[in-house]
Amino acid sequence: MSLLSRIQEKNQQSAESPNPGKPQQSQPVQVKDGDIRTAFRENIKPELKKANTPKKNDKHQELKNLLHKKILTELKEDNVEEIIKQLDSMALEIIKENETFRGHIDRKKVIEELANDLTGFGPINPLLLDEDVSEVMVNGPDQVYCERKGKLVLTAIQFRDNEHVMSVIEKIVAPIGRRIDESSPMVDARLPDGSRVNAIIPPLALKGPTITIRKFSKEPFQIEDLVNFGTLTSEMAIFLDACVKARLNIFVSGGTGSGKTTTLNVLSNFIPEDERIVTIEDAAELQLGQDHVVSLESRPPNIEGKGAITIRDLVRNSLRMRPDRVVIGEVRGAEALDMLQAMNTGHDGSLATGHSNSPRDMISRLETMVLLAGVELPVKAIREQISGAIDLIIQQTRLKDGSRKIVNITEVQGMEGDVIVLQDIFSFSQDGMTPEGKIIGRLLPTGVRPKFYDRFEASNIHIPASVFIEAEVWT
Image 1: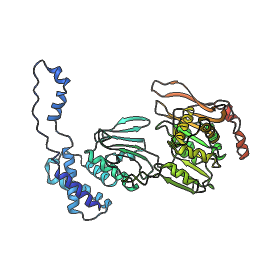
Image 2: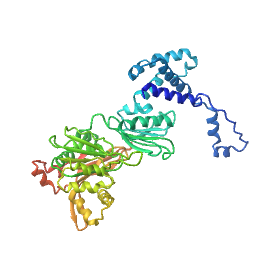
Image 3: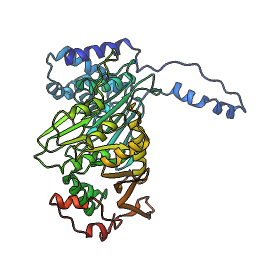
Image 4: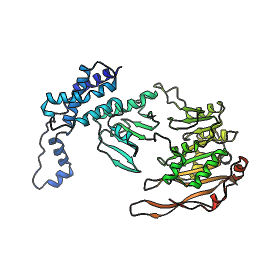
């Protein structure tokens, strides 16, 4: 279906719906004297306000509808850029013919919204283009939040109705072969720039279609950027660079929105150019700078409930692809067993992320995920697999002030009896908080040199001992 045909169909739907510019008539609410408290308790005041106050966007929407019609009747081309160039002159012509628009409409805003509908993702397009916005959250058509500099902010952006939100979701998921409908009301997707998208629709979402977009920078962050942000110190950066090049198996753990994927992406950039990298993700979002990268993406089931390809299937398949490194976007289920098996059978230097509150919790979660594979293994055998596979756990946290920090870099030292021994190499120490709410703290080495230090020397990587015992950097 061409662009003009889609606009025609949308316009016909708008014509069939009741006129949004005509306020509905309602019966006045009678309130007896001395019964004001009861009236407020029964929400009579909001009803009066809703009945007697016309919508502010009536003329605004009417002009957009007329522009739609004018495009369909006068423009016979399918070139979106040419259509957008003529929107201003067409809007002026409509306003001249209809005096009711004069003084009641922001012409530039109407044109901008229509251009966003045609070329971008509707009303949220300005937020997606704003570099200061890191996350966009649409909670139904009337409520749009964004995360700006670590803080949630309610925006003035609104959608026309639920159908308007659904059209944006369809525009996001259709190009990557995903679908969303009542039979499959949840979807994970990505934008062309790699930003992560989650959408969930009624009947599961009670307030209307809901979209959550985790934005990624157009230029992937480098380790220097994380040092400047205060996520880690230069000493920690030197240490992590050496760990990746020495082919240690590294696990990045943390909560939602803590920056795990960004850190994983930065660590991946330390991998040498002459190695073959296979990445495995639910929705491809890693931005690796190397040339020899094979990106794999899982697939949900089709409308018949068949054809699903899971992360576990991709992990198994990746081992037949002669990888030097396997990078898993997120481990959340039975694939944990296959990942540990790979790490224990010669695929050193693998990287992965997972959700947890601490390095110790990450170990416990891995034990649980291995059990999800349906293999009856004793707990001690699972722990031996984990301690033999993972060398380092990086714990990342989003603090109360919105900043993201690596709060622990922890070595997995092995087993003592039935317990996995963990040892912090670096840790974050909070010293207080400013009146503005900014957290004051330091990222410090613990003074312990890791047991795998000899592997650095074997790989011809030289790290001064001062990295582990002397560095103290205020953040």
